Picture 1 (cartoon, protein in one colour):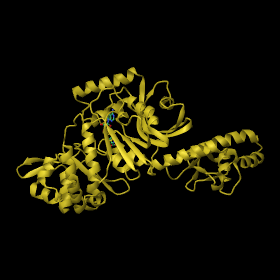
Picture 2 (cartoon, rainbow, N blue to C red):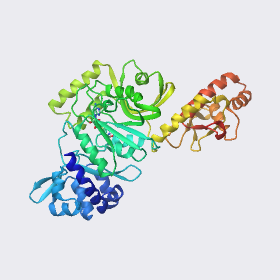
Picture 3 (cartoon, helix red, strand yellow):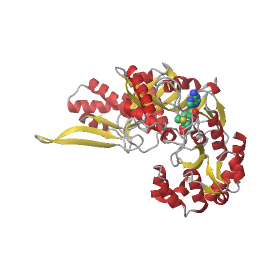
Picture 4 (cartoon, protein in one colour):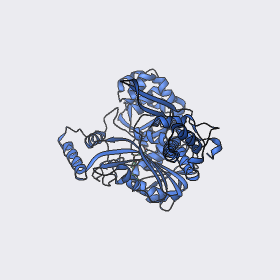
Length: 497
Ligand SMILES: C[S@@+](CC[C@H](N)C(=O)[O-])C[C@H]1O[C@@H](n2cnc3c(N)ncnc32)[C@H](O)[C@@H]1O
């Protein structure tokens, strides 16, 4: 299949460019309401809107709705690719002597720097389709969240572990000299190669498990959306099950990625971890890291209870929780969680940076909503960790990030309004919030580009408030380090930032 599929990609791309089968045109042609219906798997509004859209409408019905399309229309929309070639390549199947249907999903995606077209298996969202064991997943929420969570700074050699349809790899190619994708699935190798060819890119694709295909090699950046579903260690679907017990897939990725990073190289990995009774999740994930040579920033985006988790993934795999066979799966899965004392499943991002210094780990919750992409924030976070290693905060001058806001929440009390809580909010990036006290607010008020070093600010504050200067300095340093790690305050430009 590979050679014939690849041989169609040039003509397919020509057809897509001619018909403007790209992310912006799709939205423009369908309009917001039908475009939103596409996201909700409601074909009728999309079909109706696509009817007036000429060849672009045909491609929408062909690839996004998986409708049966008359030969004549399909041939016109796909030209110069012929129907014979498309059928031979496995892109289309014949449903009658005069009509065809898509056998593969091909859709445009614009993650912020222009359209990329992605090949994947049909996902059953518009026309029911069985999910094969080696189903190659299309672009889902996790793929998009990793795309937004991946740094976009230049990195010479990038590795995408579990490349699947190749979505991370083709985006990585925009900032890399070379991109390598690995996957255990033979079918993924075919579809990722087609995705690369359709986008006119060269990507090294290596079949094999985890890091085996790149043994002994190191990269400037590793990205991975691995099959991190936490389960019994069995494999139903290769796109989500690793065959490793519980959070073994995430553990393996986090343990092994450091061996494949060049000095200064970074990794952005989606991962999940179990919450075990009596164990702190942060200690669990941190224990997967070496004691030396890694800066790690671990962000927990959410925690699901076992029942919610099992139900969600069963539905994802096409199992109806009401069905009797499915009930047995749910029973075994939940029992396994019980036996392992799992009371929650956390998931999120793990960012790593290779250093030659003792390991520095910050594992924390980032469970609130935010809009800005996280990827470059991770690079900025690591820069701040470096700054903290090389500077004494007590001697540094800090200023507030211009997006920072101070919030006082007061409740009615016996004497009128009584301050309940004081918070600083960073108004961009991950929108971090920190609760501080009135002294903290006074300290921050004194921070400015041409202001005093922290030690001197604390001295003034201590004498004005009649407080012990040393104690206040310790507390101020703790507050400052926390705010600096989160980018709420930054060293002034004269402070070696
Ligand atoms: C969740 S999909 C991610 C696909 C794609 N990278 C994305 O972001 O959408 C996980 C991928 O990991 C692959 N995979 C499963 N087990 C693997 C293993 N042991 N080694 C490497 N890849 C594996 C699957 O075949 C699948 O393509």
